[in-house]
Image 1 (tube, chains in turn green, yellow):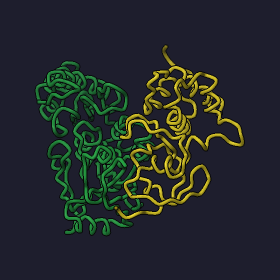
Image 2 (cartoon, one colour):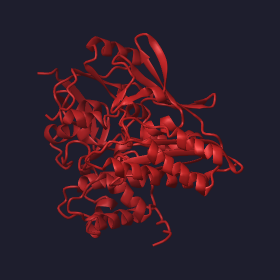
Image 3 (cartoon, rainbow over the protein chains, first blue to last red):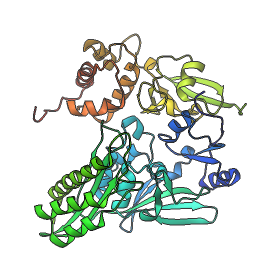
Length: 288
Length: 166
């Protein structure tokens, strides 16, 4: 047997799942798509007393649109998001990011809630949630609370979710019609986590740039909004010179760590290169 | 000893029932309990793709699923591809185009390609390469595999897309 011993529970409702989390007092792990947790169990790097498997709660998988927001149930599979007409229409950046999440047989199981709660800073979904100023809904023993993206990610693989809370819903504001977008990433092999990724959105207003969004993946312990680079574009428009300046600023804003995959300097360099690429492509796709 | 759980599922159209610990991986359940050893175990942590099966019709890695999670499900393994003594068009194409060398990754390649062609019935070469990037072939015989998947796409009814560029 690869994984360590654990009690296994497959509750049929979120309330039942919350009761189980309370019962184990922080020693239980929530199992969503399992594409990150199961490898950790197989390596015995994670040894929870119990698994609370959300896969038998069908009410946690949905995609709806209301009040200008797209709401995705936490257990919505990445493969569902990839083919969702609502996501294609309203959140095309999320759709593009989804195609870069792992591989086909990972996306059939992997979920949006699981990816965000796992909070790998190199992953695509945390960067997109941050870029689009989305939020998540956490449910705990005291009820529900909404956590904005900027308050969700604390550090590597760590969120502000409490051990007795479950991430139940993801909300992202629909992208403005005509917004240009791109997710550019560099990975050693297709489907790997990004060494650096840049999620970009630009909203044009003639020659001006009404809104610019730039967020990193892989450039530090959490996804990082590159606000000072965004401001250059919002001030100077989407000219070649402004894009060059924003890309330079982007590489100055990050202070990435070095690891076995890449040095800090290389990551900083990639941040500039990919920011420029993402902005050029986003601009090419933008209308208005 | 952890509490044992009962797992009832259909594999390749045949109903099975077994009992195991909740921590038993689905791939081990298929191979050890059901003696279906066509599904291979490679890395055992969701990287190499050799253990890919169809879980309720979709490709999934059976080394990072628990057997208990498959209770009530329908699974297709490589053993279920051949029908009435006739190879599946994908298997036929792998044979025709030298899509296997040592054969270790082949079950994973076949099951991944099966789901891939369902959603993209007439892929370009680049799309095939991206699709099968989910499975590692350590013989590095990818060219034959790519050719086989494209040939199977034609047999299965998709018209090959005209590729732009080289």
